[in-house]
Image 1: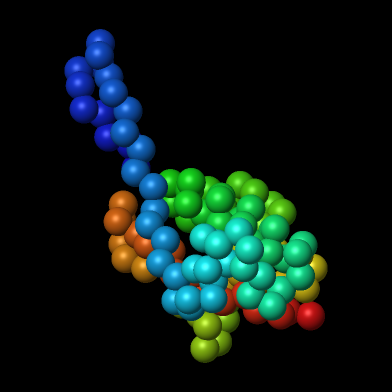
Image 2 (image 1 turned 90 degrees about the vertical axis):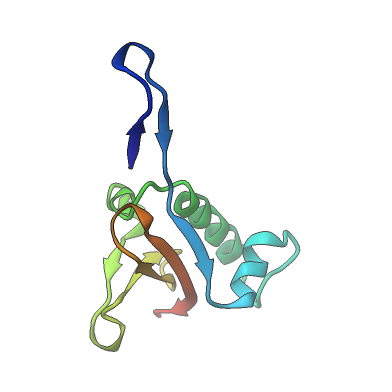
Length: 115
């Protein structure tokens, strides 16, 4: 969401970003503690942190669609309210989009084995 605060001649641009909420303490620790591994390989942890960097800097979920390596996909069945982001060939980051309009929050649910 973009908000213009001043007249056209002196515009200031404020860009709102989505908030992030971790459903699991393990994932919050994995993101905030540089020594945490959560039981995952170094490659998965590194990619998780990279993807989290993309998430916290996203304006909304449409930003994920322009990064084909993420393979942003809506899930089906019991998980139809969730989406996945690819970490590597085996692992996916499961997220939920919560709220509506410009006040959406990304719920980080789990790292799931899709192998």
